[in-house]
Length: 229
Image (cartoon, rainbow, N blue to C red; front, side):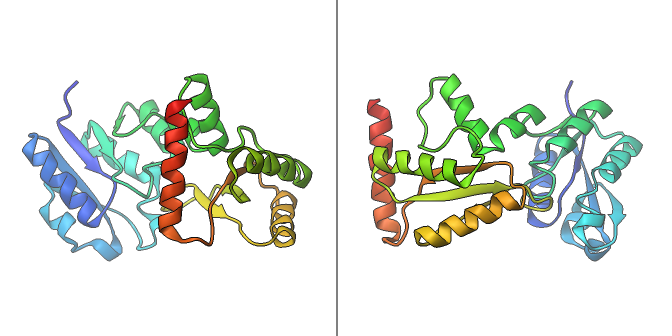
C-alpha cells in the first residue's frame, strides 16, 4: 500500500530533509515537536505538527507510545524515525508493526541480530560471508576473555584489547566502549564489567597507538586477506 501520510519522529535538519523528500513523492509530512522546538523550522514547514511533550528527549522524542498515539489520531500510514532517537529501537519497530503503522527502517529482528557484535558475527558465519575477526559468543569470565584474546593475537598479530557492547537507552542506541591499556589495567576493567553484570563482552584485535595511517593500512591488509580466503 502506498504511503499517503508520514509521521516524522525526529527534529531539525533530519526532519526538514524528510519533509522535502515527502513533498517530492506526493506524501503529506507530519511533524512532531517538544516544547523546546515549538517554533523550529521543521515544525513551521510541515503540513501538520503536533506537540509531543516537554523539552527532554526522554519525555518527547523517545516516547514511542506518544508517537504512535499521534500517528493513529492523524491517520499516518507510516513513521520515519530519521536517525538517532528511536531509529535503532527494536521494541519501537515491533510496536509500530502491532499498531498497523509501517516503520521505515529495518525490521526488529535485524536490529536485534546486528545490534550485538557476537550475534552479527554468527550471522555472517552462517551466511558464509567474510568478516572482521572477533569472538563469536559472549565471554563469561576474565580467563575466557584472556584465552580468546590470546588466540586472536596469534592469528592476526594485533594487540588484543577486550571490548564490550553496553546497552544504553537514549539517542544513540547501543554504545561501544573500547578498553585499552596495559594488561593489568585491561584485566581490572574487564573484571569490573563481569562484576557489573555485562552480558555481551567480546574480544577483537584493535590497533592502538600507531595513528590512523597505520590503522588504515592494517584494515586494507585484513580486507585483502579476507578476499583471498
